[in-house]
Length: 241
Image 1 (cartoon, rainbow, N blue to C red):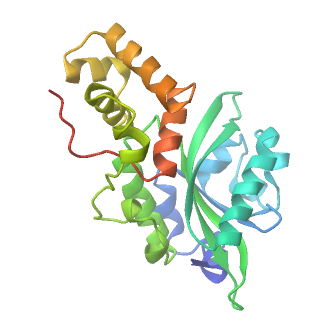
Image 2 (tube, rainbow, N blue to C red):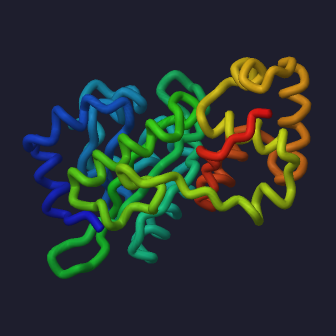
């Protein structure tokens, strides 16, 4: 849980502001109607705005990813209703017109009356960074808002990644397919995966087609979404035989 007072102090430019701006992730806070209360330089650039002040009091509907408003506000309300931090994959379109599936951690924001009145969000493109690097950044930023205890286990600083994929992966995928997924979670491209597994690029692509079919998804980013939603990150115990 994040205190509203902490969010407003950040928005006013307290000692955390420049430090958080150094992270290559979007950091933002919204109230219960979806209006932005705070943000960092990264989200203003993503939205094509000249400054963070141009973001304040706007909703997602008024930004370049306005078509995703219903999805984003629904995720915000889910976090507020449940009163706990949640990871979600959120589709947006950036200022250049590029479609991006952002991995977002959203935490509930609470006022002095202990009411959930908004969310604090930390987001990035999961294909740009290794999952472990993202979770390290998430932990540092969330802790600066006093939210360590609210983080899922695998996103806490120093926590071992959760490895529990029996229902999602181990019962559905072959050992080699699991290796491919582990490489994907670690941020490796298909070419890098082929090198690590000592297989051809074409073979790796065939494996991913089989993985998508078995998991009922159509894109690699949807594989990541499925993993994050179920805390099955598979960052350890890779066989690579």
